[in-house]
Image (cartoon, rainbow, N blue to C red):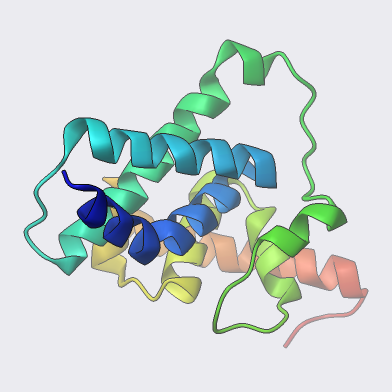
Length: 166
């Protein structure tokens, strides 16, 4: 892979990879570590992409796998975890088409299976079928996770605001 090709992939996929890593890791430093590892794997394995969708799916799937590996690691499991995303970390995560979104932070606090489905569906505009392929789960599981995730999100937002959501 030439330097120019690598730089093209980097410029094109950096933001997506970072957002997915941040969603999984809930911190700037950990997201940067995962991002770096994704691009190391790109250099190491030099995959041939069939289409834009295949390329994007490879980056998302690789990012999710690396994040899972980091979260399972001895080092990570022996350190103290912070369940909530600290306020200071929020400044590192930006969606280009969203100015400010407290709902996003509530989504990122949900359990993994709900968080991923909701995030990919609402923030990355993936279809249920595409999410099922990315996560390697049945479409009906994605639908169930979306439904339960919405319910959990509604409850969390009601708790934070102190009033019922419509």
